Amino acid sequence: MEYLAILLMFVKAFAVGGLICMLAQIVINFTDLTAGKILVMFMLFGIALTALGLYQPLVEFAGAGATVPISGFGYLLANGAMKGAEKGLFEALTGPLAAASAGVSAAVVFSFLMALLFHSHTKQN
Image 1 (cartoon, rainbow, N blue to C red):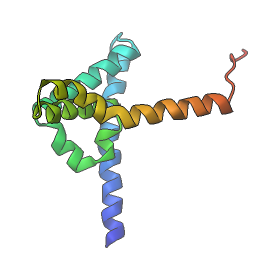
Image 2 (image 1 turned 180 degrees about the vertical axis):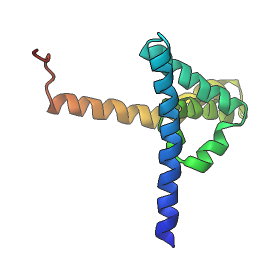
Image 3 (image 1 turned 90 degrees about the horizontal axis):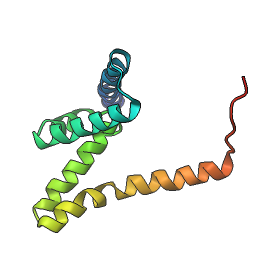
Image 4 (image 1 turned 45 degrees about the vertical axis):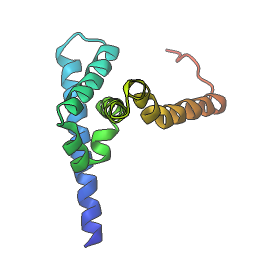
């Protein structure tokens, strides 16, 4: 029975994460927005949905399916700011930085390690 619960957790995460990615692909296909603008838009949607209290139930339902996409980064920043705001103005400004510091640090470290291991080159046609 435990295996069924784990399988259901994976299915929910895959479905929600896939839905978010599908929405992004639709925006890419039907607009002239650049990738950077789309990333910022989805991050801001994550912040807005968190502020409205709508993203937390999605995270509880789908887990990594909701936290791994870029909208999950917006959720993380907004959640850090809201928790910090309970302590004061300074913590409201530093809360998002503290909440995201581990993920950003890991991304920088692993990117550096991959840059040392692999050498990029221009593709020849």
